[in-house]
Image (cartoon, rainbow, N blue to C red; front, side):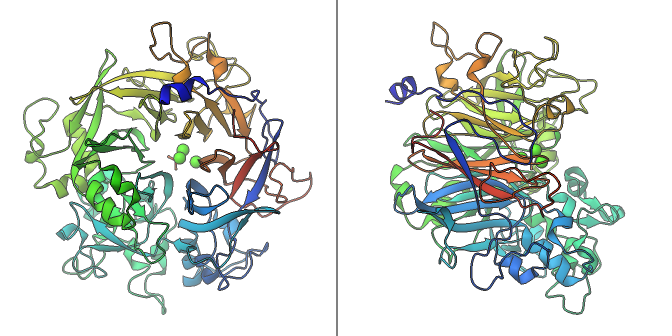
Length: 613
Ligand code: FEO
Ligand code: CA
Ligand code: CA
Ligand code: CA
């Protein structure tokens, strides 16, 4: 049983010290290899990566993208040495992407567009370690320009009509793909996080939902791809579409609706290279960080959890209308299975109450406002209308403003759900029970159990980030040198029940001691004499152990193990001066400067054993 599996599970490595070098650090007895860095060709169309930055936009469309983030390994025929890696490419470092003196023109902007999105790449373990299989038929890129389908409540509605999709069921590209999820039927879920900054609009023309979600003004765009609008070689508004300001008579004549095609959970079938990615609008439209599914039970709905990563934003849950049929795990029409479970259901937002209880509030027309004076029907005309401005609907029903909800993860042993709340230094005057620290510079991890047959849940805070030398009011979990951390972000359980926590550190008190890192803990082992799950505290905090430290200036984000638990893929995003060689643990020599490349690192145990135990 699951419980027996949990009893034999314990961490088998010693917590490592912090590190501040241009190298990856892993425990004694492990090695770490650089695999699939930014710019690695997927096929023979692309030139090899060039260290002077002169690869073209076409090369980039046929190579690994930049700034790896969420990731999942999909085995081929159940193998642990041959499979497909799906890798998110969240954003770009323009300085590293372009050669010195590159002129900003349509080619330049297309290279940026093509460096975003998702890669599917076949990887195999060979006598020379893990290798990318160039020209494999599964290899493909989804960029910020790739045609995708829209499904769920917003499909075929007026809000999705653009000159590109007059029926309102297609869009081009996926943006700012941060965290990820997967499904029980073998598809990849990529999450669109900070997409509003890619779109600009004249503030005088902005709609309420554009203002609420944070679309950029004409002068505050993140990459300003719209500035190539009208280029002699512009194809079908490929650059114009990033400026939402109405210029024509209606949505068929301008790109006022373009951003309505973003902010979703996007489903990809990595096993079918001819398939089209699908944006599942039923799961809400916001800055999705991740998407984890709850513990499965045959004959019950499937639920997916997703945080909205922005200060004072919310936690969401989607519950399928269809009941889980285990036979669907083996179907090969995977996107049809996705439609069955992800296009119809109920979207909820979380309210955390002060007695360790919480409530899922359905985002439907009949739900009352927080003060009971009206319902969502007073503000929205349809379910599609609610989804379009998900966060605005959540405001009305009284959801709890959180300290930047990042990844969710589900304990395979207990079914308990965990959420990283990365930090919130703008929480200056009002706390709430689930976010109890003012100026929350170090973040925390909250968790909950669903109450069967109701919309209630029971929650507690599992651990508070902190530097080891902070006072007891701040270091609430009693962390020490070997597990001090701040800004928890990436997080997932492996199949055995080890929870892996990655950091995206913004707090000097911890970064002065160590670079971003990954820690491990087995929450299902932490139970009191009555069998109740314990939180981390001074008496048991040593169960949280540091397993991995990244190179200088990086973020550690995205993780996946092979089915045999012997190969651990971890992503390094935006390193400063790394990698130096294919040995991820080799330090870039002092005085040497390399063009930095985000990369997957694959960790193996020297005795070929399972990772972590
Ligand atoms: Fe892209 Fe919320 O981290
Ligand atoms: Ca993140
Ligand atoms: Ca980051
Ligand atoms: Ca983050």
